[in-house]
Length: 198
Ligand code: IMP
View 1 (spheres, rainbow, N blue to C red):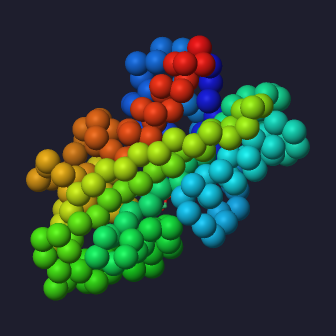
View 2 (view 1 turned 90 degrees about the vertical axis):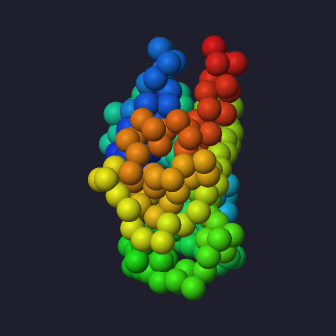
């Protein structure tokens, strides 16, 4: 079965395929079907996006080559710093493009210990002819004191050290990140659902 993942971010496709690789008859393929990112929680954005993309792909078929009835997923993620009341959270994309990691480190420059706690959260929205289902994953950790990267990962990965590690996500190969990440946890939940469906 092919699942169409509506995202403009090829890193997410790579991570999803690594995580689902042991499901032999499932593959994830990128589709470029932009959807409006409504203001709301990750759950609300994913639910809205999944319905929107499913309808566009399956009923309106606006130039997409996806035949009717194919299941789709969207995914909305965010980076939440606990001592900043969850900022940037649902504004993660905008903040990464404007303040960038340097700006987050600046906001935390006088913070230590638990005041540097943060987490990533992912919500996958899956839609088929039965409607939408959501699958969630969280990974907790700390914000590093400086940007640390070996060129892996993207966005906040170079300032996030997951619990139990001393490297940032951007210092881990994608395969290593994909063993413990928020995306891994959400896709594991999704995987259980897919296995029950087969
Ligand atoms: P999106 O709307 O799901 O693409 O996520 C919003 C923003 O969160 C992205 O533009 C990235 O800046 C950030 N983000 C999402 N997932 C990750 C990740 O796995 N690592 C680092 N940053 C991420």
